Amino acid sequence: MEIEKYKYSLSVGQRIKSLRLQNGWSGETLGKITGISQQQISRFERGINRIDVESLAKFANAFNVDIVVLLSDYDKTIYDKNIFIANTLII
Image 1: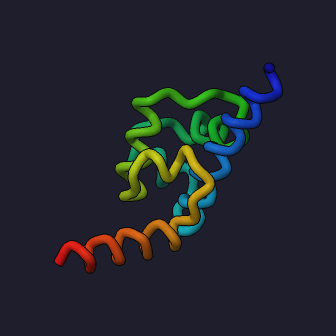
Image 2: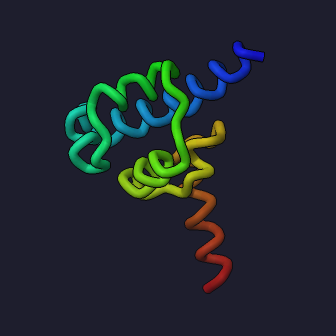
């Protein structure tokens, strides 16, 4: 059971790190944007600390993505493409 908790924390952390690097941001830069310390961001990214909902919302806002992107295995490129297609169909 404890391994499963770590697996999910690590998965979310890896998604945060991936998005941070895609944006060319350091942990310090992301910290300034979110108000979360660089040390805490590092712990989240490594799956050491479990992330709370408020922090998830801050990261989602910083990356301009829905929280579901942080919680799933979606690739941001695929997500953006699907949003574009959905918006095109609405118009």
